[in-house]
Length: 139
Image (cartoon, rainbow, N blue to C red):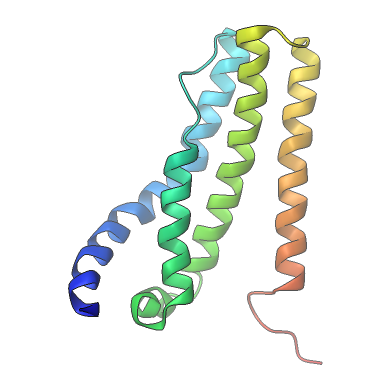
């Protein structure tokens, strides 16, 4: 049964790896378009990030499904960092959308709040990798 699931899982992951690596760049361009043109974007891809996160979680937690991704040792941590960065940019996009759509606050405040949201997520990611390093420290 595992092999049948693997036949479906690995081709999906082969498609999702480049998408995950390019997702922060795509989301950054949409966030910059909000600031540049002052027009909200259609939606933020929370559902897509959740699916990608689940697939990376399965590869991280399962020895059977994660075996090909552990051969390239930097791949899973790189995918995790891209997901965290995408979440941070997604939160910034939501804040900027609120400004562009409903004018809840000024443009300066919207950019400042978006940057604060991005920095907070990046600090939490740094804390996560400080507590659970990719390479174990020798003590």
